[in-house]
Image: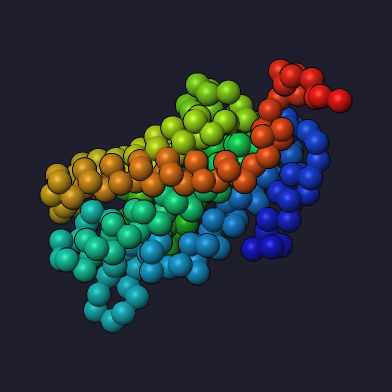
Length: 223
């Protein structure tokens, strides 16, 4: 993790806030790589495990696809954990820098694509959810100032978390694979929004306020 995030650390130490396209790609690759490694080592709460056979005779269902209590409890845990690490990683990036447009969408898509290679089209709803989350991030960065302030980051986190799972559940329902009740999947979407907002708010506490301002619009420093 230290090796994967070292490019982001080096960029963070520079005074500039606006990253050129190459620097933006480097920062996004660092964040996405760290997220994938985190998902690998927390595989029991990773949405990428859906569709895999982790024990003989049993295939792990996608979140929303399982109908027994164990699968539902595990699914809710996956929803919370996935939103927490996804929002935390992107908030670190968006609360400190201005990155090139479109890279949030590309980054989220790269997180969801490995499932397609591992399990085939069965994990397509999860890939749809990550792409939708990327679109949500792009829309949020267009609405709020960049870098994101604390309020903007919290709203972005809530919107991203809710969009991720709402899109996933919609794709599952369209494929007639949704086995959760409306109360359960609706609660998962709501909980994801709350976790996203809380995570983003906590992460922005660690970003220095003077670094999260654009030098062109910031008031002059006091002498």
